[in-house]
Length: 293
View 1 (cartoon, helix red, strand yellow):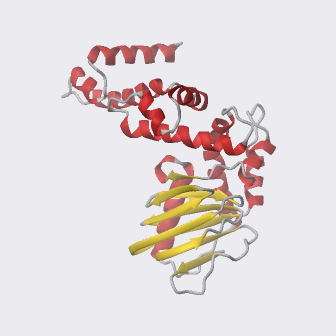
View 2: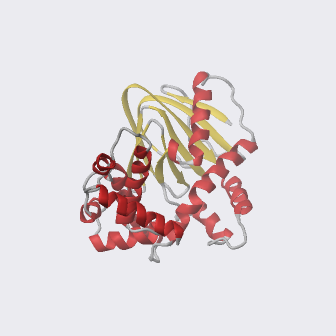
View 3: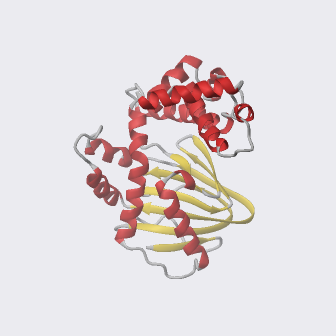
C-alpha cells in the first residue's frame, strides 16, 4: 500500500497496518504531531530535517538519515522549515520481519531465533537513527526515495517481496547490534539500551575527532560515563579498547596517504595524529603483528 501525506490534506497516518506494510511519502513544512509506530517503522528523511522525541530520546534526523522504531516506541515529531521537508515513513508488518528472522538462523549462531525475533518485536529493540551510507538498508531507501520523488502523486504499488527485502536489510544490519547490546552485563533491558547509547556516543565522538589529540577521559565525559566504565563498556561491546580503535582509525588514513608519493612519512605521521614517524611505524608494525598472530 502507498499513500501521500501532505499539508492540509485528509490523509492520515493513523490507519491500521495492512497485511504486508505501508509506504508513506510525506511533504510538510510545518508539523507537530504524535508519532505512529505501527508494526516495525522506518522514518527516512529525503530532504530537510525532522525532529523526533522517542521513548525520551531526542533525534534530529537530517537528509540522508533514518530512524527505526517498533510498536513499543512512542513520542512525537516536529517539523518547522521554510522549505518542504520530504520523507518516507514505512511500516512493516511484524509477521514479515519474523519470517525473515527465521530464515537467517544458522547452526552455531550466538543467539536463538526466539531471542532475535523478540529483539525486533518487543521493548528490547534499540530505537536509533542511522546514515544511509553506513547500512545495508540505506541504499534501498535512497533508491526508493528518488523513485517516489519523481512522481509522488502516482499510484505506486509495493509487493510482499518488497517488504521482505526491506526486512532482510534490517535484520542484516541489526544482527551485530543485538550481539553488542547483549555483551552489556545488565538484567534490565532499559539499562542495556541506555548504556549502549552512551558508548555509541563515545564512538561517534572518536569517529569525528580521531585525528586530533584526544584523551579517553574526554571521550568518557562526552558519553556521561567514568573513564573506567567507558573503557570497560567499549571493549566489551566492540572487542577492542578505545585507544586501539583510535589507532586503527588513524592507520586507515595513513595507508591511504602513503599512496601519495609527494607526502613524506613524517608529514603523514603529523596529519594522522601520531607524534612522529617512529610512532607511526611502530603502530604499523604492531598492527601487522596482531594480524599475523
